[in-house]
Image (cartoon, rainbow, N blue to C red; front, top):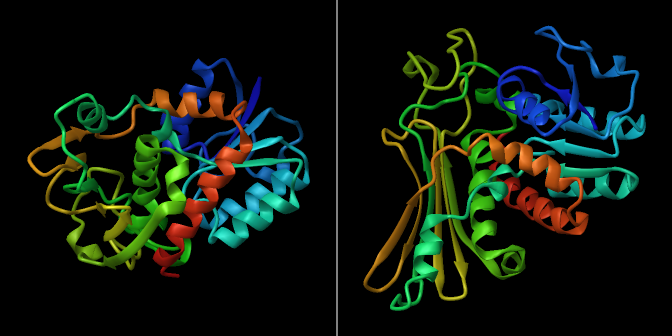
Length: 297
């Protein structure tokens, strides 16, 4: 099996490349900055079983459609947040029917959540009243001053970065059939910090001459039947709290999930190649629709 990895720095180099190799793929890379097999996707002169795109957000659509037009790979995994809207994603899927487009959803392929397992395994547990799904970082702004914090290049901030992961946590707990029953009752996002506040970050280097004009905290509330679901994400929230908490009348069940383990990325690729494409389409279209309100560009 052959894989083409577009974007060989950062998560590409540190996660996707080793995980693809562990799964037995022969991997070629595309990157214009660090040494790679090709320095541009238009130089690719071979075909592959799968392509993985983990480049800056604003490049996703152009690269993915180029690969589809040139029949370079029949399956293309696109890092979150995918494309700029649900319509663009759905129209692309419809236009290039010979190609499968799948948004990267690595959190669907990690171990089952302890919070929901503890809740469902407790025979005395009351009805779920509230569900909190949070990814709050103490100081984990991705490369402050780089493309991630520049709305013209990223499209937006923390919601585009972390909400897809939290949506996947929900889907893993309840399955895709529940998506049509969710009503978003409120949402909010705000920029709490500026570039001069980024003396250091736990995730990447600071570019003091760059741009920081995206929201770094986001929150939304859903209603699912009688259950209220609260979702929060923050890059620099002053606390590390990556957790799912189930609240009942008398008890709470909490699971601190932390960063997604690397093995889940490899499982995502291998299983995604054979899983029902309709299943992925339904999830990916829904995630794109949820994210539309968070684009700031």
